[in-house]
Image (cartoon, rainbow, N blue to C red; front, side, top):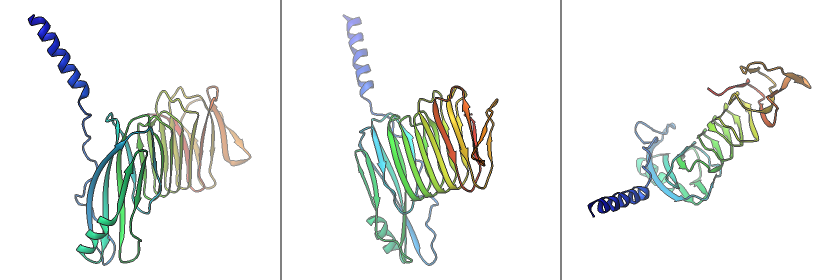
Length: 269
């Protein structure tokens, strides 16, 4: 009887453990020693946090100022932390401006909006977001960088002014920046069919696992092309600023291009 009681107690504890929520990650964003600097204006900072149901995709339309960082967790939901910076002519006006900035979090989407920007008021939002690993992403910013870590779903990101860093990707990746470096690192086993990394003013760097099988195309107008992958024999395509080569049987496609900057392909560290 005592053994049966102990067994039932152990099963009950195991069931409770399975129902325990995932541990909330420590915040990476905060308002400590962070200000928005604009001549003649005073600034304020606010932190917010919210969650939404996970539907397997996340879309973030572009917004004026601020960056996006994506991390994975096992919480089963999308966790969004927002840092709102605002600058205006007085403390009260700055606080009111920050309060008027909206970060709308709904299943599958985070939308940032706020008052108009001018010489007397300005605002920015930085997003720290946690998603399940298999989430497919479509992210866009105007003035701000984008960082994605260890997401296994398809990734499509773009920015006008800002760098892009993607690490631990195992699916398809499309990344483009007008002004900023684009860095894409694929993890093994990489199961995607394409990595497309593009910049206008900025370097492009792509890292792939040693067992990657892909046809690689690299191009630049003003810059250099290079690879540290051993035993690569490339051919020039059309002109001296474009080359192509195959890794193994060349089943997938990897493309890196820029106008002003270098393009590099290397093994994943």
